Picture 1 (cartoon, helix red, strand yellow):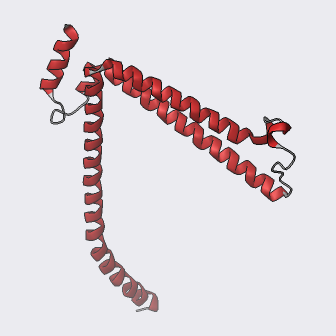
Picture 2 (cartoon, rainbow, N blue to C red):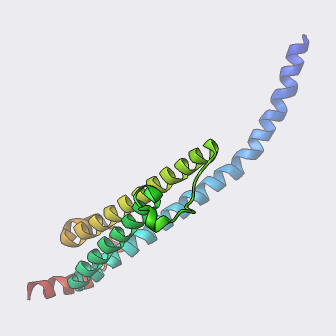
Length: 169
């Protein structure tokens, strides 16, 4: 028998034993992770459902909430605009003669990367807030359709019936 045969046997046996010992803990970790993920998703879904029920009971607060989100977005957009444009839009009277001047090419590039990164981060925050606001609005307006997508163990049918009665009055 050749050396390659013994080398193959010598490597395959420890690899097989190691794989056999490693699979059980990895499988257990995957099962625990998926169970935790399901539990987190269920809790988030319940929290969203309770928020929609709250706004169904108090629709005037939904309008206030959406207005506050728009105002906060305008403030954030203003801050992002001035931070990204910097000295380019400010007159010299405001910045003064000792204004920040970048001399090195490296620092100019660094400043550009940081500015663009802040701009991208700000745009992603604005997009997410707008998306969450629109989603909340549609869940409240089209509650019947939204409630069908919620599992029966999360739904509170008594509160839903009370809200329907109040809406009919």
